[in-house]
Amino acid sequence: MPSPADTLRTLLAQDKLHVMPCCYDALSAKLIEQADFDLTFMSGFAASASRIGQPDLGLMSYSEVLDQARNIADAVSIPIIADGDEGYGNAMNVRRTVAGFAKAGAAAVMIEDQLAPKRCGHTPGKAVVSRQEACDRIRAAVDARADGADILILARTDARHEHELGEAIERARMFKELGADILFVEAPKTVAEMETICRELPGPKMANIVEGGVTPDLSHKDLQEIGYAIAAYPLTLMASAMRAMVGTLERLKLDQDRTPDLMSFADLRDRIGFNKYYEVSERYDTSRRDK
Image (cartoon, rainbow, N blue to C red):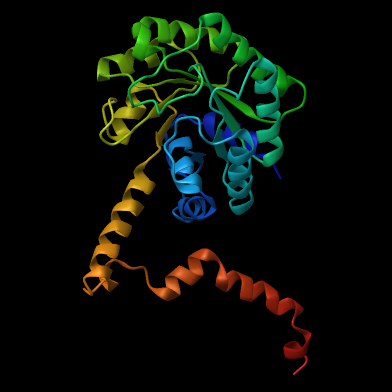
């Protein structure tokens, strides 16, 4: 069986856009796989909200994020990309972060150039470290891969917010030269900026589509024609789930009919894995088999 990293490498070698809904826990990842998507990303924003009920402002620790990624990787067979934030410290911390996510089963890990504590890419107050420190992070990540971590490096820059597009592109170009596998220039504001990113940077690029965010929400066809290899949708599932839950809670409070918005109990059990469990467990039920 190919490793998760090898599976992702094979996907990226295809001349197509990979649509990537982002997960936040094992169940959301299973639903993504059941819907026949090729890969998923553990959104730091959504994972922080789901696991600790707090905003994505650097409040989750490395061990908490790693544990969340491990649970997700254990639940699905499609490759997952983990959010490694700024690496949780200096370059040596970055090396540990990359190695840890590889052992947890992630196919790739994202390392970014924000100041700690990091912020969501589409919220105010972002700032980035110097070019040198940003490159040191990616160099450390690549070194961890070279030392045996079977994982791809997704290098992210948020420099567009503070230093305009030219600086972001230059940083991403340097990340690629250092050995990053996938490039991610966060939060371009126009289609023209997205076209410039894909035209000027080599290798696979990722677009991050936040509904209501600053990046244009283009069709899959347009994103592929521009030149993106991956289109990430970090909050689509969480926003959908939260809206449904809030509405259902309100109807429950008012004693109104809530069944139209509920998945059937049979489908719920099947998607979680009850039926598969029963099917496999029957192999070991000797008392029933002998009758």
